[in-house]
Image (cartoon, rainbow, N blue to C red; front, side, top):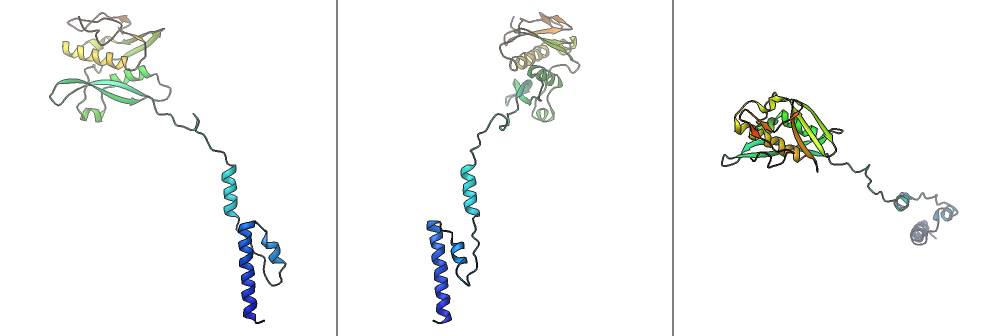
Length: 210
């Protein structure tokens, strides 16, 4: 038998064992290593291992710890003009920092007034800049918002009415099932402003209707 014939037979044998290995799982390394002149063949088992890892690895189910919670938002009301130059109350959003009380954060943002972007979009506020929050107290379902007396001064009746509605809308939209009362310098007010706008408490959308 010629050398060429021997090479052909050896190649045929190798191909045959590879085929049997894929179909029947026979370990051909041991068989081939017994045949003189044929080196031991290293099989790549990476794909098989990867498949086993996929089968063994449990499906991960998202939990409260793995799912990032969306930041809670507070809603603040400023003033603006619509396309026909009519006055409207403009609602804006603020992300509440972790650990902050929603209502208290919203009231503080109301006192700060609109930010640069909101001002560029036409938002403004009638709340006097000298207004200070003296505190927010909660007793059961009653919530007391206490400002210094500067809240009622400056501007005419329309200005006082607008700032009151800013406060009412902001307070109502950042509380649930609470009765909200306005205090100035520690005392509940039933009239506000130089011309004495009557206030019905607890605060609601109709509190300024006489």
